[in-house]
Image (cartoon, rainbow, N blue to C red; front, side):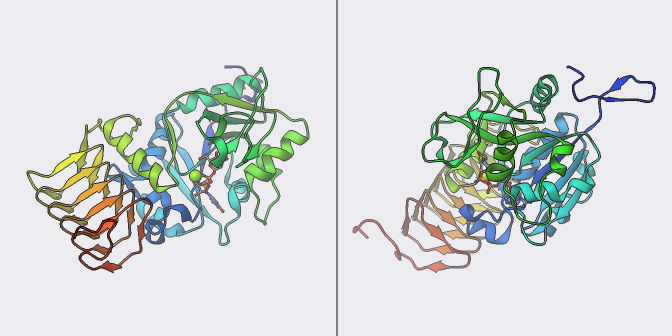
Length: 371
Ligand code: GDD
Ligand code: MG
């Protein structure tokens, strides 16, 4: 590792300063509504633990213990669950924006709490397998002011598109462009020299993607890319949430928070699953949930206390806390809010979202006529 960002001790010897991490968790998670009406996105359960625990475990695994959560929406939920972070081997602190300041504003808002020279910043909704130490190594050896972790995806339009030159230096940052010049996208992990964070305008909403990165590049300053092919998924939509959860269960997505891959399904403590129910595709059955006789769950995420009754089929869908899927119902590519009741023989398909507590009567919604 080069000494580009090392600090110097009293005797003039180079010493590496410790790295601190900031995780941005202040978003409202609108694309995952109605689940995010009752919990912030990073706290939704995935493979038996809040999603954020997988990310925090990865940070800890990289040897980083000093972590700040940049909160806003439902800020208290994080502190209530993680406290001082000691259960995860972390020294966790919280800095809350009363009014959401955006990604750049959220980073600027924690500036006074940062003491290290090198700051890792994470979007709080990314499930990833990248070795964080490799990203830091790229940052140190290139001497850049900022380093961005990039991955390649099939359709970059929903992300920050980031072209680079032959030396891996970032040449532009194009957030959610309809006309992406490359399939390299911002994976939502950044390394900042602390001084750069101090330059972000304070006290107003700022987008790191639309304002901070483009402005650094316009000044001709050095942003380096770290590109790799490790597992990566933004969990911000129901489709991705379901896929990411299944990938964790099947061991396709690595997680230091899971003892081992579980195979085709994960049934949590106190769940009651009928012997002839079929659980496949990385299905998770939450604590105290009940799965009736002959039910078939394929890539389903069933939150704690929910029920899927006899003969029901649930595919690639999320069933919220204490919700009920009635007997012989079909639920596919759907989100069912907490405590909602989907009546017997209902059919919910392709992007349906049932709001919390709503009760759909038996046969109430169907896509076919053979009742
Ligand atoms: N503290 C704070 N304050 N956090 C925020 C705020 C805010 O005002 N707004 C969003 N966040 C957090 C979210 O909670 C999330 O963890 C992260 O910032 C990114 O916000 P998203 O809303 O999930 O952004 P995105 O998925 O549309 O796009 C971002 O992530 C992509 C990769 O996953 C961008 O960074 C893209 O460039 C990137 O490709
Ligand atoms: Mg996101």
